[in-house]
Image 1: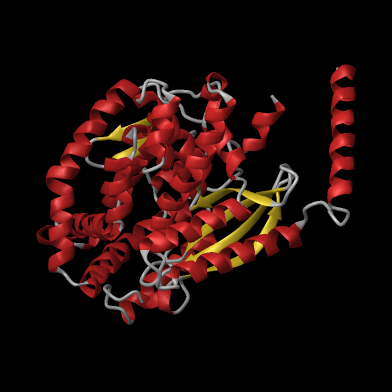
Image 2: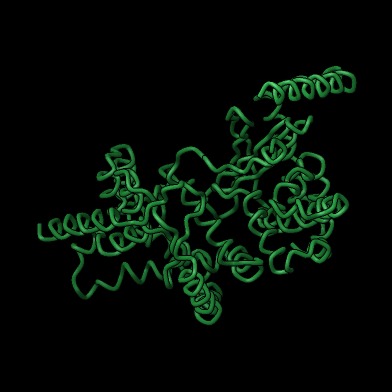
Length: 243
Length: 200
């Protein structure tokens, strides 16, 4: 009960926070009023990647065999699933809530949390989070921001990320001695992804002519695609000939 | 306004007449033709990535594929952005030529990660301005992801002009990339063209 009150007050604070987001009044494709600060954070993140994240992920990927990494990733997804269900319900998406509930039950019973039995049975992962909930509730994405350590985001999704971090209902069922488990699984999962998509991320960060602009470009397009809707800024090279 | 309309109709008539003369069987692009084109592209990609050829040989194959089924000159023209107004015609042509090889190496490298995987064409969608052919890439040990090809006949031929992977457009990515490369070379087109020949 206390947990519930806590979650709803967080949600309220988040909604007020989003209401204070910068307004993209001219509806430009890339709304980046904080570019100067963002670029500083980007070079910090890039330094962090080359000195800490990349080497650590290489060690992680080299030491742990692929099936073990897969298990870690499945487990991170598994303990996040109650949070997905909570957000599905908040979005009024009963179908996805039921889907994720089925996934959670299947993976609890047959996968012990580390095997993704549900995906093998055709009940694939459908991730969501509070950023998407805010989107469904009508919040605009606001300005582009790059967060220290966490990387590219926007004002709305940054609020979502904070709420996601503290609102996993599974935390309420854990002893204080087990509190470290969900964030640790999350960090390990991220290291695994850094390793898995190593060549792509290296290309983005270290081979792009302007890694800040390219990261922003990829993030914004991919995030808008995840949330659905029309591609209002689609690339149409033939328009150039109609000038 | 009426002037503009006249100019356009005359151009359209001329283009139409030229098209009729050259290609008597030419008919407008539709769902089936867009799908058939991309099925051909996907079959070629699948064949190239599973051919067991060397990296260099695969890049040459990808370059042929881009030039044959993709509207590379139009993409190249567009990714230059407003800067192209400062370029000469021969610079634009040299850029488009270097850009084809660059695309083949850069995206060929990505497609090489698909080795052992398959791309399957799923369906098509008419957006009004162009056709979208939706496909699914199934790679070993990874969740499947969406690859969308955008097809148009506005060049006079049925060609793809963009590939969108999980919402990320090749055209927009290259517009950002080429813009940044040109900035880094202080707007020097010849330097850009020279470096593009080995980039990717």
